[in-house]
Length: 428
Ligand code: IMP
Picture 1 (cartoon, rainbow, N blue to C red):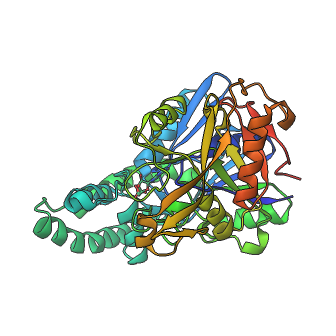
Picture 2 (tube, helix red, strand yellow; picture 1 turned 135 degrees about the horizontal axis):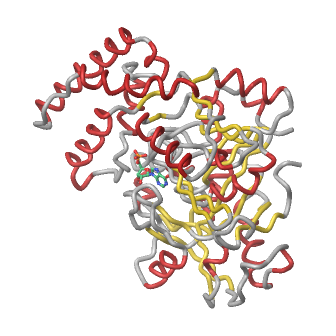
């Protein structure tokens, strides 16, 4: 049975929760491999809507073991509050597994995140302010705090002191802020240690064994391809690797074990935070996409920037992730437009460019070249098969598939759990 990676093909918020949920019943493990509580999955189960930030969406499927891999950064306070929120609604969270190697987001990481953004002024990234970047920076600088450190007070104290030595100089001297006291941080972290302990496990061993035993393991990326620190629109990116390779490093599973890589692709494009976005709309169409699509961030509550579908980006996602399939989401949002523009290439300095330019400067002034596709006005939310879709909606999907470089194997036609057309099973 397969090990699948499911990731965002654009700038995040493509509707990954719904895709994971579609597979939920047949999946044994759902694994987050990067990011932290900057992510936001909305999962609709029956008449209940759940907004998850840190926990893998598999937490809502009773037969599934949710796993937070080593590549994730974990704010322990958020973890515990998200768990208790679910427990209050009757969701059993006892199967959760948390890698002892995952790094912890502490209050000083969130402080540094917010202070740095303020300091950057107009050059700010527009981060979620959750301490993600500073925590990954500490990991790479080898001054991070890991989950396992919670169980050795002396090591924890030494590590927090080492991390704060440098940070306090910056906070006090550069940002004019009060220094943060190591003792108070250690004390706070220790209050979480016992509550988290039952979940801590050697997740790479468990996951590799599970794959070898033929279990279905789903690696769920947070954010999206264009927010990847290596392959995204740097520096307007997150600080981890949502792309497919990140599933291997962030969960401790080799690339030979991955059988399928599914890109979640919205039928139009959205982005939150700053950075280039060639098909962004500033007119009533953009406003309509935002309103009809409910394009407001699950995590930050910020309005998402909206624009038409960009096939250059979709092709790029196919390339850097080795996508085997797409899951096209939110097709229903486009119902009602007479014609739908789709960006097929860019114009850069008077030249037509088919592939995403590697040069940041070029991408910043890339102008979309649009092709107009005929729209449809029929309600598509009840469609169960591809042939139930109006002819123009079918043609729109087929055109996107051709331009994007991988088959579209499922289509989201409404927000509910069952409002999905499955074309090829992801589990075959
Ligand atoms: P950070 O991940 O908080 O450091 O933010 C870096 C950039 O990634 C900002 O532009 C955020 O808006 C964006 N970002 C982070 N998480 C998400 C997400 O789940 N969906 C969409 N954008 C995100």
